[in-house]
Every structure is written in C-alpha cells, then in structure tokens.
Length: 265
Ligand SMILES: [Zn+2]
Image (cartoon, rainbow, N blue to C red; front, side, top):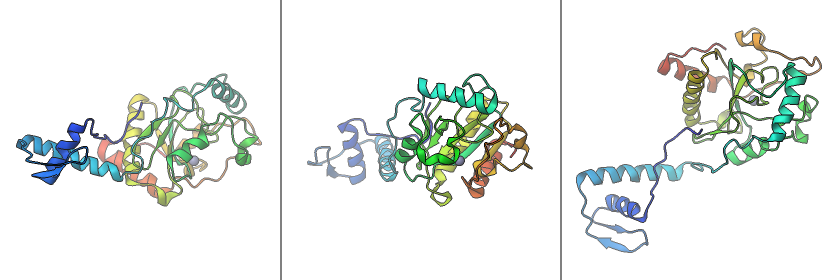
C-alpha cells in the first residue's frame, strides 16, 4: 500500500505537446523540440493543460518523486525467523505477528536520503555499527512505513508483522520512519503525510490509543508506558532524540484540528 502526493504525469508525447502549447501560447516546442505554430485549444483544454503544466513543474523540483521498490522490501523468510527469535527473548511471544497494535511511534532515520535510509534497514541482520543493541538479538532494525522528504509513504513491512524500532514496545507498536538527518531536516510534506497515515492506521486499528515520538518512549510518567514490556533485564532502553517535540506537536495538532483525533502520549 502506498499513499502520499498524487503525481500527475505526462503519459504521451501528445500530452507534452499540449502542455507546452498552453504555456507558450501561440508557439512553442513540441516533444521532439521542433518549433510549431498555431495552437488551437478550447478553454477547457487550456485550463486542464495548465493544471498539468503546473503539476509537472512542481514535481520536477520535488526530491526524487517516487522510488520504485518491491512490495514490502523488508519482508523475508529469514527476517521473520529472526523476528520470532527476538519476540521470544524480549516478550515471551511465540511468533512474529503484531497483534492488536495499541501504539504508533514516529521516528526519523538520521539519513538525508531515502536510499540511505532504506539501505540501512534492508539487511535482515543488524549491522555491526549498532553494537549498542546487538546483544538484544540479531534481527535488523526496521519500520512498517518510511516517509520520504517529499511526503510519499512507502510500506516496508505488513503492519501485522513486528518491526524492531523501539525497545519495549515492538510487540504492540506500529513504527513510522521519516527520511531526515535530524529534526531540522524534516519537511512540512512529511508532517502532512504522517497526519494522513496515522489517521488511516487508527481507522484500521481502532484499539490504537497512543501516539508518541521515539524520544518520548522511555518516559515512565507518560500514559503509553503501561505497555512497556521487556523480559531481558540486561537489555536497557537507549537515549533517543528523534523526531523531536516540534515535529510531534505539528502532527498532533493536525490530527486534532482536522479529524478530532486525540491520541494519548
Ligand atoms: Zn527512532
């Protein structure tokens, strides 16, 4: 499932010609770059073509409009086996299924590009640079969704499979990653995409009652903390700063004001 910006595209050389014609008026360049004259179009066509032109111009400045990736790029037999191992050690759960999610956790990837972000999560096994959590199991970190900087949402894992993204909550949390190096690297398009995505997740899973940023996950005073579960006493939560209060405040305001949706912290 993919959601996000609707991208208008020019499908045929004919479409391109019409757009050029509408922009340039009585003369312009056709698809092959040959000058042509006398462009006769009805008002309706002119308006439609202008919309096309504006959309096409807008898309051209968006960073990498849409990436072609296979469905559920993080899903593999090996990853499911490693996830099952993780679920047994940390939650005492026999299986990799995410049952009755109650919580959505928002992150950023700490990478500036979509490709770097995906490449980091793609291997089934944790890389050596995550030595801080390697003792907690071999399955790689991952998330259910990855939101690109232009607001396009990619579904990396089915949302009924556990993803490793937040110590203590993976058995019940849906994880949303945002492409971004740090909190200042996140975009308004991502805010919009997160609002729509969370509302969609809530519609699908009405039992979800909590929404937090990863930086809030270890705060014991917050209501979501009743869900914390960790059987391995040596496995400690790590300090997190993603995605930050400002990003979460915008998402919460959007959910509240647009959809009347109040999710607890
Ligand atoms: Zn995070």
